[in-house]
Amino acid sequence: MPAPTAEFWSWPPRYDEDYRPANHERYWFRVRETMPPDQRDALILSRLRAVMAYAYDRSAFYRRKWDEAGVHPSGIRSLGDFERVPPVTKEELRKEQAEHEPFGDYLCVPETEVRHVHGTSGTTGRPTAFGIGGSDWRAIANAHARVMWAMGVRPSDTVFVASFFSLYMGSWGALIGAERLGARVFPFGAGVSGQTRRTVNWLRQMRPSVFYSTPSYALHVAEVAAGEGVDPREFGVRLLFFSGEPGASIPAIRHRIEQAYGGRVFDSGSMAEVSPWMALGESTAGAGMLCWQDLVYTEVADPRTYARVPYGAEGTPLYTTLERTSQPMIRLLSNDLTRWEEGPSPCGRTYPILPRGIYGRLDDMFTVRGENIYPAAIDEVLCELADYGGEHRIVISRAEAMDSLTVQVEHSEKLAAAGSTVVDRWCRDTERRLRTVLGVGATVVPTPPGTFPRTEFKARRVVDDRDLLHRLRTEERR
Image 1: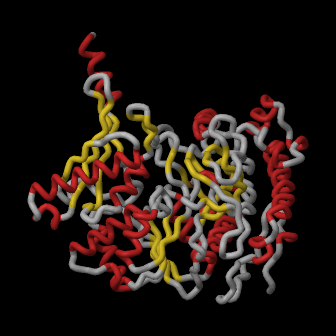
Image 2: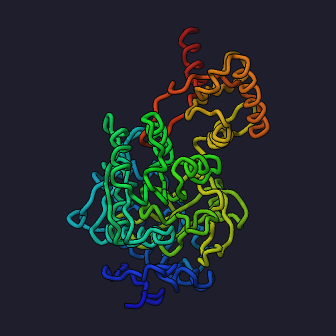
């Protein structure tokens, strides 16, 4: 049957589960993906009003929040009006769930309609539970199939999913999207001791054409393969897509992965709370992540005023789900950092573009001697080094009045064999590169390869001991 057009973009969403484009077709829904932005914006405004009315009627949380702000769904007559809607924070979601267990007062369906429970790990506070209804689960699958299709995934592919199958939504979203697209799926997982070596063995045996994980884990798999005498290009992977952490949009990291595997890298991902998280996702054009606005309405906003910034400017994304009925997110604040540009993309899709993807988090930023520094900037410098050993740690400390920045960098076996003079010269050159990019000096400490543990999830590389030092000295004075 022909692809449904935006005119059939219904609320609540309904999809023809039997529909799939012909393999040669570039678009999943040609009309929706290529329509003039002004026409799409008018449809999005109508949907925003419907979603807000739905949430206002069913959620005490949204009704209370908007009443206090003097906002009502009926008063949203333009996308500019929508910027008056107060953002939702992760802290609010955790508080709501603590007071209204288990899913919070923003659950908009009866608990009996929740079919899947996922959530956050809780490593930085109370875990947040995602209650996902059956219809939402299918909407996520259909949305992810569309975005994966834009990357070039087809029913003839085998998709190897190499990330945790637990609370983490990334693995499940990749799985159900690939299933809906009609591809063969290998849900291999990650996280079990010794599993990475088995990953290498299975990749050699099955030769999947598509690989999904975090960027850090893909590099770890390539490193383990090399240690086993296996060239990752033997796996036959032609396409790798990622989420979970900045990296896949950083040119140096992308290049390392593409060189290792011989396949094309695609970045995707926003927040698990707003799944379909692939509503930020690249296409074969390679111009950056597209904001698939008819799935999740994305605003790149000033982090102080929460008003949209103009195209070409930097800000933090706010997300509004347009197809979720169980726990709709309406202007959820990400605290991520990105820059957006106006479409169309070279692939013909008319969505806004994030040319550098999501390249940092506002709460990951640290300040050293007056300079704001994002870990991703250090990652990019190091990944461009010929003798970078694959991992590093960023240590911020304060011995007296001044902050100091130290970067412990693993180097290659070849560099170590060249002797201490060559290693010292490599460190000084790296320090010069870092100063040029960061605007502040950093001390580079050479570290033997394999010093730091590899991760199968999100890499954590920053150690800020300034607060620890302050606490110790306070206790000492006491």
